[in-house]
Image (cartoon, rainbow, N blue to C red; front, side):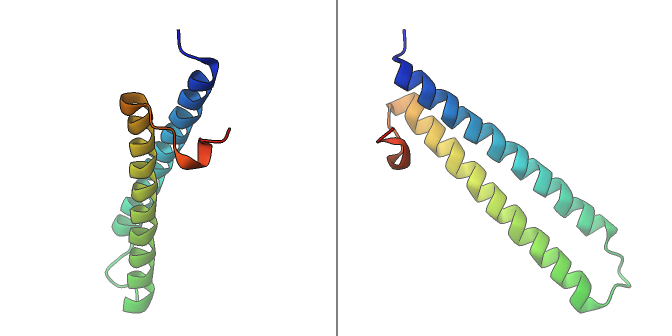
Amino acid sequence: MPKPRSAGLWDRLKRELVRAEAEHHRIQEEMNRILLDTPCGVPLADGLYRKMKAGADARAAYEDYQRAMERFRAFVDDGIVPDDLNDR
């Protein structure tokens, strides 16, 4: 039976992973919508800015998702507690 602290850490890391995954998918869908909805006739600066911002947001959300996945995997597979949760 897992120790209560371990179970609590697993739950927390799993919630972080699920939240990061959902945010990544939400932002990816938003970026796809922007790419599809931005007509070719939109002035270059406006359309380009929207696409660049959507891409940057999608990249950041993906990096957060990867970080959450790595933290969860390291804890589950190797028992490594992330530094920011080590004192709790």
